Image 1 (cartoon, rainbow, N blue to C red):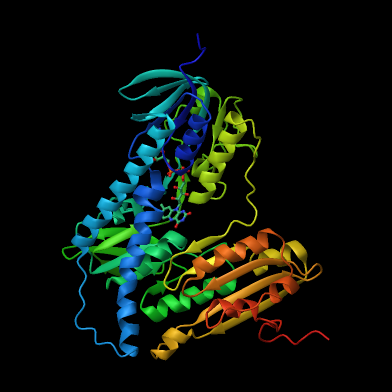
Image 2: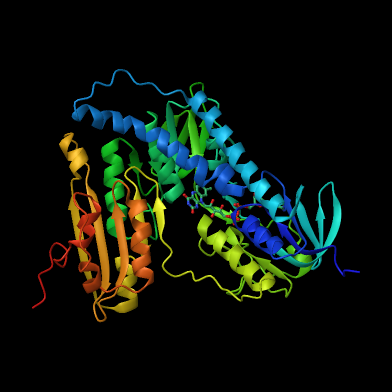
Length: 460
Ligand SMILES: Cc1cc2nc3c(=O)[nH]c(=O)nc-3n(C[C@H](O)[C@H](O)[C@H](O)COP(=O)(O)OP(=O)(O)OC[C@H]3O[C@@H](n4cnc5c(N)ncnc54)[C@H](O)[C@@H]3O)c2cc1C
């Protein structure tokens, strides 16, 4: 008789949990997955996918403007928020169903309810009792962090609720400077909402290359987002006509909706991890080694709950690597170097590798190649929008260690650039690649002149 009810118990059916469960089940393991909300997790239900659909919806307003420059007459286009939400929810339900079927087809069992550890081998699922497992995977993701002490915080929403607003607001204040805040500011602005983005730092998109941060701020401003830096909320008050945000600078601003996108925290509360002896860091993330194994020998954790790189493809690869290691006899650790990512702002950002500042810190001497230009399409339509492309090259070995783009399709371009950077491409090899014409991307392979920051002379 088997020692445990299951070979693997996965807590959380999001990106990382579903991939791990599927691969383990396909390898012949007896797998149970517990999900307290909807299968698909943050990415499918309240993250990447619905967000990208909202980005698409919001981009049309700018496309209509550009179309005019090409001779089109675009008369009185209107947007129906309710109709969009209905279709969006249908698509999310379809995708969640695909995830459920994938689990079932692989032979994994699924139980709906909140799960918590009783000890290192026992999991209790609310309303379903207890089960034992030889191995346990924590894949519970993260959740929005809210400033609980702020007066009036109960009037504010997080990104979770932004996907289900019953009405499209006329005015919104979004607090935060990370990619989620920036993306939502562009979404609401594109949908015609008066949008204020308020951030306590001196610039948005901390962690990104400084030229990218400044460029995105300028371009967002050009499109109509009011970006207010170096301030934060002191209170939110309900008024007869909306919500009054009060700020540290003494300024105030009334809006219909206040959204906080101030960061996310690993979702480890009430999971019983202490009972099982699983070590957490100071942010509440599960501490793991390169194989995603926790401080307890038979418990692993993948995805946002480990707070390494909080992106869907990373959670998927960590989950896959865990399952290959433990159930396919293929020891695999995911390499967190050179992970590319996109910010679906308007215009969007694609980035991979080191920022200029990080590269200078790591290598000392770096060569910078940078170009700013007006894309043919919008320039023709009389718009002033600018693209930015930047390569960071470590001076000694001439390896390209960073590539950063702001402009149309940059998130698509960066996927390809990431292959080259991951392979250790040198600037000479990069330049030997012939351009595709006429494209924006060709500018990437035609940057031959080193960039000298204003005010600095060229070294002799
Ligand atoms: C607004 C937004 C936009 C984003 N956009 C992007 C993007 O464009 N690109 C990108 O790569 N990433 C994006 N992300 C991040 C991405 O969604 C996450 O990195 C990814 O979903 C993490 O996967 P995960 O498996 O770790 O966790 P999740 O997908 O969060 O899954 C965790 C699951 O565990 C369940 N759960 C939690 N606790 C329990 C419990 N005790 N019992 C049972 N079930 C439990 C949860 O309900 C959830 O379904 C975005 C995130 C947000 C919030």
